[in-house]
Image (cartoon, rainbow, N blue to C red; front, top):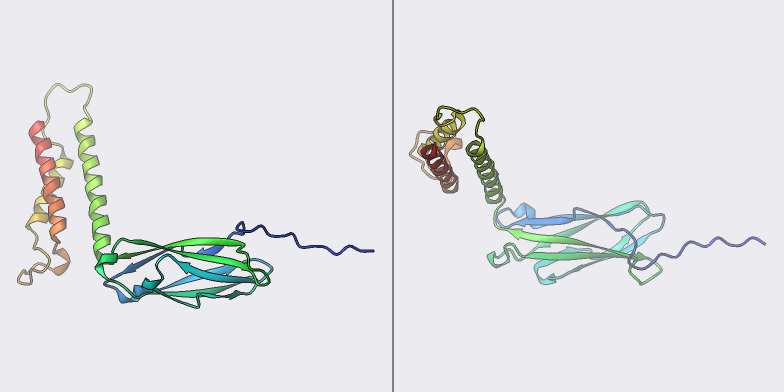
Length: 213
């Protein structure tokens, strides 16, 4: 007699779930981001049932929140943000995708996806860029101040790097501010108030460093 080969029993909650992306970012000023797509992949030899849960279901609309994925196939899950008020900026919500075999109820695996609403994509990019520039220039100034040659007999003046950075900051402060329509300077050279504040801060550091030399 031949024994029938049994498929190994899957342990509840241990099945890896493959979802992309693992983070959703919605921007209030960009309506094209109010609709996001999650892709659920099924690399296994058996079909999967899935269900999408959310910590704040009143803020989102999930199209096809439950369904099935054929073996070695994928399915797209559309998620729409329907409450883009400012009081929700920066709040982290979570979606949980649970999968199970079609013939069973128990969840074989689960995956969490975080979702965040931000006010503006452009504003976030500017803040990140200004932060990187500020950190880089501050590190450069600290390096210049801490570096002392071993055989230094005559006190030297400010380094060329510090002078160059000072000239760049002064030029940045002289450029027109965003919204100044009467200026003849091209629009791409107009700086925001935050960028000018960063330039003024760096210029102050340079001035202090020069006075100490």
